[in-house]
Length: 189
Length: 189
DNA sequence: GTCTATAGCGGGATAGAC
DNA sequence: GTCTATCCCGCTATAGAC
Image (cartoon, rainbow over all chains, first blue to last red; front, side):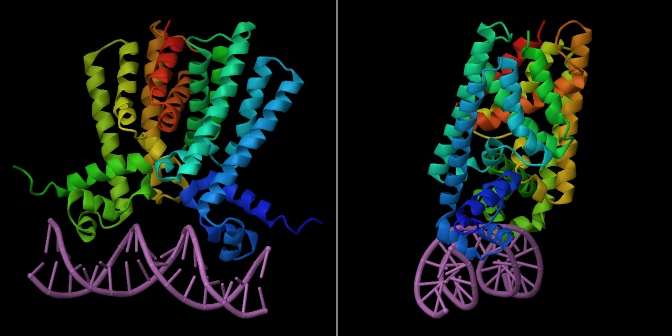
C-alpha cells in the first residue's frame, strides 16, 4: 500500500512538525528517526546533511503555498474571504501549539546554513508579496481601508501573525483568533 | 574603578546580548566566558546552572520595565507619546540586528526550565498589561480609535512588534519603522 | 574568584556489514 | 535502504588547585 519508498517523505513530515515545535536546532536526527521507528543513519541516507533536510522542508512549504495561491485565485472570492483563508493556513498550527515556519526559523536564523537563510527569506517574500497584492486589490475595490502602502500593511499583517503564534503558545491560545479579528475589523470598510 | 565584584553583572550583560541574538540555546557558558576574557568555570561560580542565568536576565528586564513605567507615568505625556516611547524601547534591538526578549525566548520555549517559562510569561503579561492600560486611557481620552477591547488591541500591538523584529532581521531592517508607523496611523484619531 | 582538568552527555556525520 | 558501531565535537556541570 505504497509504504515502500515513502520514507523520504515521512522524514520530511516528521522533521517539519519538530521544526515547528522547537526550531531547527531543537530537534536531532535521532528524534526524527525514533519517531519513524528507524535509526539515525537511515535518515542520513535520505538527507545527508541537516541543511539538506532544512532546505527541503522550506522548499516544500513554498511549493505548497504556490499551489494554495493558484487555488485561491481560481475560486475568485472577494478579498475579505481570501484574507480569512490566509489566516486559516495558520490556524492548525495554533491548535497544536506550534509556530509558523517564519517564527520557528527566526531565532536561530543567523546560525542557519546560508541556503536555508536564502529559502527562509524567499518564503517571507512570497507571503509578503501575496499579501501586498491582496491588500492592493482589496483597497482598490473598496473592500479594505488602511493607511500607508499595501506593502507596509502587508508587513504589519505578517508580523502580527508570526508574533501572535509565539505569544499564544506562552499565554493564551485564543490570542490568535483575537488578532485575526482585530486585523479584519480594522481594515474592513 | 569598581572593576571588582561586577563580574556577575558583566556576565548578565553579555549573556543578555547573546540571548537576544540567537536565543537561550544559541549561546554557551564558553561564549559568555570568552567574551569576558575569563574561563567557563568562572561563569558557573556566579550562575551555577544556566537556568539561573536565564531567570536572572528576564527578572532584570522585568525590573527595568517596571522602573521605565514609573518614569513614563511621572512625565505625564499624552498617550501617543507614551506609545511611541514604548516602541522606542525596541528600536536599539533592531539597529543591532537583535530580537526582543519575547521573540528570543519563543522558539525554544517549551524546552526551557519551568522557572524561565514562568518568568517569560510574566514578562509578556507585564507588557500586555501596560499596553492595555495605555490603550484604554487613550481611547477614553479621545486620542486613539480601534475596534475591540483595549486588551485585544494590546495583543495585536505586542505581536506586531515581536514579529517584525524577527522579520526585519531576515529581510529589511526598515520594516520595524514601517510597522510602528502603520500602527500609530491606524489607531491615532 | 578564577584557574585546569575532566566527567558525561547528546549532537552531526561516516564506514562498512547485511 | 537500514543496520551497528564509531568518530569527533561542543555543551553543561563539577572537583580541586591556586
